[in-house]
Image (cartoon, rainbow over all chains, first blue to last red; front, side, top):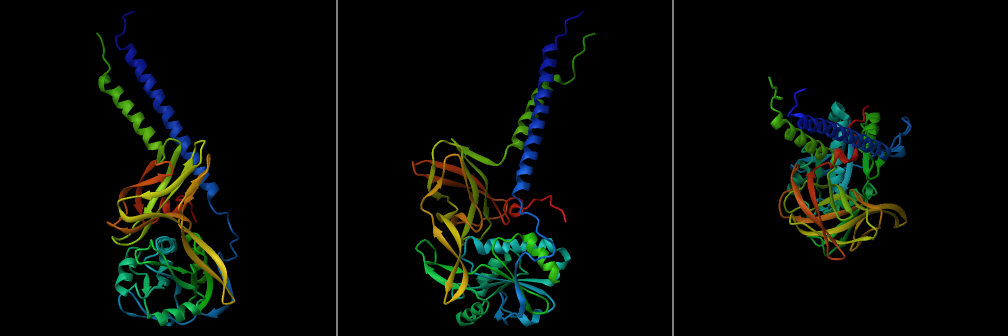
Length: 218
Length: 173
């Protein structure tokens, strides 16, 4: 029998194929384990009949809001009857919770699909001395320019925050570029199409859960 | 007549390249130094001059506690580790929820355990960005350890974080 000169090459080829297949199986195994771990970290399923947010029961008429939006237009909460309004109080220098909340709102909006046409996402600044409408416009547009960024005089903001039970406190902080942080309540408030204050979602509520609650109110 | 396998000269190296590609594709986006692995790092997109934050999971596979005393990145004028704390307290007789932040001068990752930096919790605060952080960017962040070491992490920038803030992309309704 003629000696084949490409025998070693064939063995090498076979070896390469074995390694590739093993590598592929290992990669598949890794992805499956990763997926399993992700599933275990998911929130457990909650009964579909209850809201995920804290319920205001009985619903109360939402305190009126008359402020100016980031484009300089007047904003009146009463003009948004027929829509659901999601309301948050924060400030633009906030590095963690406030941008996270607005990012979650973009996810809620995506979850809702067409229903999002009837939802208004509203951010009210609790630092009106630093946050101007122009600053709010740059900040909000990074997430969604259709979201509202509301400004008012310190007196107006103080009054509205108090009516919504939102605590606001400036605390000196040497590391802050502006010399302070603002401690504040971080709930998202939900107002239904009838203008009633219905729900409060604590920061960290899963966007899917917020969307599910909003669907029930629409 | 001798038959040669067509193209067998280039085929084997190409196959090895494929093996390497498959292995690299399967590797998690993790940065390891010694016994420490940093997984899932990301930072939120923000404008120049604004504040932002970076998040990650720090896993200490080693036998000793890891003590992180700070962080450094040239995308911000100042970089510090902070923790957001959600508190309920009585304010003028009313139960009030307040969110505040606390500077963390020492972040300890005990031997054999992990610490998660997530929105609403521990985070690396990036103060006064020196450039815009845009979705898709990447920058280097160094975690500084008590013993003078640096753990360098490559941090991608996004608005929502990995897989949209931890959501399972396959979750259907």
